[in-house]
Image 1 (cartoon, rainbow, N blue to C red):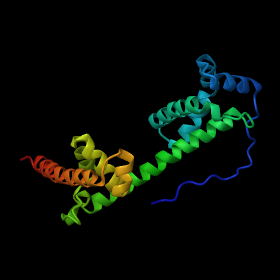
Image 2 (cartoon, helix red, strand yellow; image 1 turned 120 degrees about the vertical axis):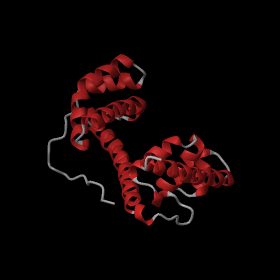
Image 3 (cartoon, rainbow, N blue to C red; image 1 turned 180 degrees about the horizontal axis):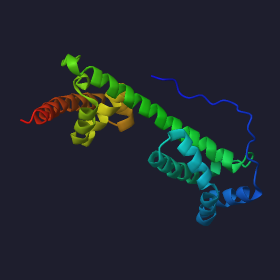
Length: 201
């Protein structure tokens, strides 16, 4: 997996603290939606431009921009006013983007390994991932029941242990193992269907 992009001090001038922003942020922290709407209007273009540079994709940039402002609304009380609001929004943007970057890198690594393992056509320790191409994986996961899918994704893709998943989902470890077994079994069936369809059966 590639290392995460690092932040470097470029020596650029940091945004100055704007007293209007401070007032708007204070009001927004108290629940004033009009004040937050004004913050959005004042900063959305800057945030979107930053998101676009980070993602190099207009659709992803638009989605990330909206998520940044949702996070800002929820977290506005944590803005101290000791730095610029623009800088604070920038940090929110970077944090959200890094979370997505890590997730995407895990997904890309999994899909790449799955595609490379296609020719092996075998199961290792009950896992079905080596049998799936990138497209197969996405299509089959969508067809799994929600419970089995969630456990499979958390264990096989995200790498959580059985007891960790049990704590997150508030289920017993036995239930998690059962759901994982069910997911693997269903994926084998779905994989067979996908292969038959690809051969025109």
